[in-house]
Amino acid sequence: DLFRLNNLINTNLFHSVRKAGKERIKGLIYVGTACSYPLTRQNSLDVIPLKEEELFPALPESAYGWSKLMGQLEIGFLEKETGIPCCTLQFHNVYGAPCDYGARSQVIPALIRKAINYPEEEFIVWGSGRQGRAFIHVDDVVEALVLALEKGWGHGWIQIGPSECTSIRQIAETVIKISGKDIVPFYDTSKPEGDKARSADYSKAKRILGWAPRVNLEDGLRQQYEWIKAAMKK
Image (cartoon, rainbow, N blue to C red; front, side, top):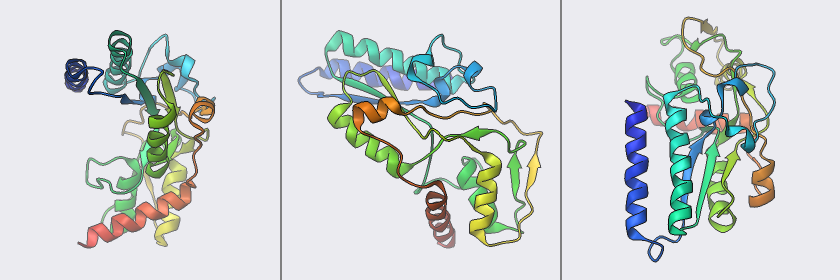
């Protein structure tokens, strides 16, 4: 159902843009995802940063990755047919505040919540912890969006993420360090891990946008930890 709903969202938005026309719409930035890259490039722990030209032949791991890829194709047709300048930014794993830290939240806010609640809540990590992602702070993402408004038009898709792949185990250990608690993590290998590992070759973003990640991962995690801790007290 996620695939169907995401495609409907994309199609309805692009249809509205097409109806509004070039006179009213000066440009459109589409948010893509690293999940759209082929599973065959993300199924090894030996990480070679992804390049934009590796997006095809397509083989995303999830329905989400496929739906976002369909949006990229659709916005490409929209640009050709209407002349409206378009840009696709493919985000890697975005973290930072504000954020949802509930039971269905993403890995970083979920681990931070568990650390704050520990020992009342177990510090359970999904999977072996060996799986890795290219985590990018929301401040770096906002900077990329602003730069894309100035320089991103007509260059296809551009990855936004670091070249470093950080394991979930490293994230868990850093969160424990920040908490200052004597936490014993439990790695639940019965839970899904998704793609094994990925990172970004952000050379295209650097060349076209003048962008590079700035926020240090531990600094970003500390900021998010303090935000969630304060939010949980309200």
